[in-house]
Image (cartoon, rainbow, N blue to C red):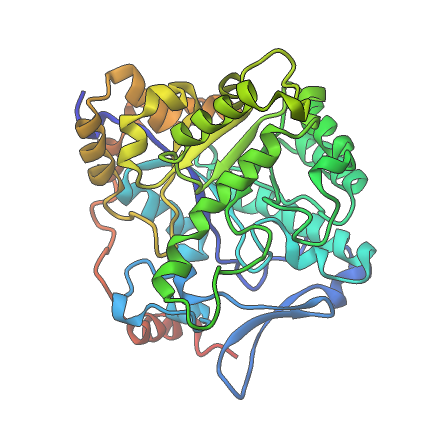
Length: 421
């Protein structure tokens, strides 16, 4: 097998939402109260604003092709970032140039678990806006290019019953995954150990919808105090997947819902063998806790419920047998600072060769596991021969992948759209 023969499906990318997102999707009753993207005349920065609060897009979340000396946490405007961040047609062109067939995209301003909507005091308004967001994501973003996007709607975190209702609604629209929070209690909502989320979990099982849990989705922010080096703060969030997995693994709801599926987005894989070693040791040794995994071992429980997702994790590939070869999926993280665009296939292939993965293993890691866990079939729309890294790149040879500054992007944007008002 050659690098260009791989078929890549990314289970974690991101949308920088366009300003017209709610148009045509929010009921007329709520149209005047939906979030709006506005430019602050004092600062020149764009902010999503409404009565529920405000949200900006930090540059680390939209830095693809920007020089690294321009990266930072200062909020951005659409004019200063690559169009593929917010324009779905340009996104598909960038996916082609990177050799990526399909993508599952998490939100930006709304929070990776929808915490932006959950912060609104008027929960009826919050639900109307969240539903509008989901309809835009499914009906416009994902549906615009069949076979290229795995729909990923948001769940209303403020109420498990409402969340269950939304699962059933979006499932009827074709969604096979929905976001959830890595730590509901930290986000101000009921703990998963309380049993309160069982109606939501039940709906996910009934509809065969996978929970997609992204690191940092609880909104806790970066770890550390004022004196903590930025390197510590940026490298630590990926480990949030470990306590999330531990809480879910010991959550009694998993015994009640043995078919519940959970994707640990951007959580990586290299920590999992040690995690499972500790879980096995604990389960065999600390019997006084009364834990019961329904006759399964911790490793068996993990493999039944969890899909581990990685961007760059060569150690995880070396330990793939301990993780479970059917439980590993690939992600690109476009357009965040950790993304591998436009050299995703090159980096992944280097690590695949290092780990001496076989052809069947490669297919599972690069796309088959993702397609099975997320019940997505891009080949209904795109023949396999046209879905490979080589075939996709060949039709995107004209895509400009040069590094460009914010000012260059701004000049190009304003030449087409005029200055951001």
